[in-house]
Image (cartoon, rainbow, N blue to C red; front, side, top):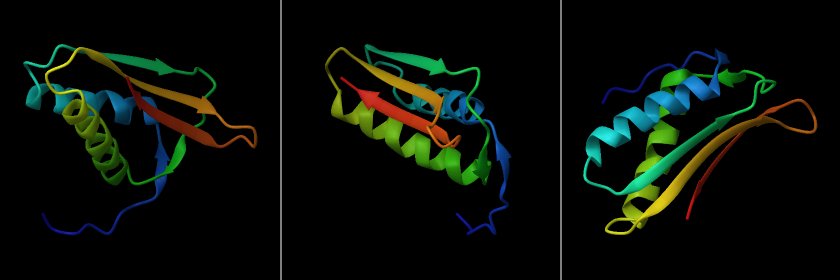
Length: 94
């Protein structure tokens, strides 16, 4: 792929996560893995490039699918407001 300049704009991390999970689900159709999405209503928007952030989340979720390959498990993505008002994104797997 070609490098992009990356535009820093307010980004909804929940939307980025939903798109990333959709992309990963198409790659891991046979996986018996549950994906949980938990987005806080008060989570602020992150300042960044949505395409670059989506690629980061795709990589994390894809790695979690790979680690759970052949097993049942859960991948959980959540957003929250940090103590200083920053946006937080957490990706966990079982």
